[in-house]
Image 1 (cartoon, rainbow, N blue to C red):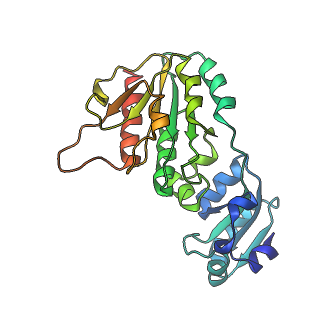
Image 2 (cartoon, rainbow, N blue to C red):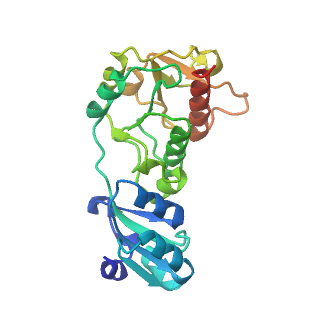
Length: 261
């Protein structure tokens, strides 16, 4: 593993097609090792060597090198002294995940909550949404084919590794019918005239699915057609809308908060 990394800079490799991802820094390395992902090697500089040895525990190949060499291998300066190379887990299709989730009976303190992201193209936004979904105990994140790579380095950093522990699937718009058919409302976050203000929406006892669109284009038509109603956050006339990660986090908090009132 380490010889290959030394010969070929990670920046120049198509890790997605290789079935690999990079976890940067102790926190993401630690969470990658703790996850179900197979970590195939770790590189660290001298300052992080002791932490790296503890994390590897003689089970994972480890290379110790200088900071300058680590920069060259990684191809970026954000590794914080160590990074791991790991195998990407397979991401199942929504049709294999949604039925079992929707069949689970909700309780007074645990509703079924699904986040649907058809076309989030900014890695930082996608990662932040995963982090918030984890914080507010969402059961599943569904990603459309127009969304960016959830194992992108920036996505992993922004998510603080939430992608490594949260259930995630890929989805097509027609698969949302599996949610609707179970009586779970599908809410479109949209600044539409008839949209319900988030604080005025009464949370369904069965739970909900929240759909967030691209900041520029909104929710793609095929996905929007599957939604039960629109929900919005009131903002001043000085701005058109909020950043999607901020808006999504507020909505997830509001919808989760209501479940415990």
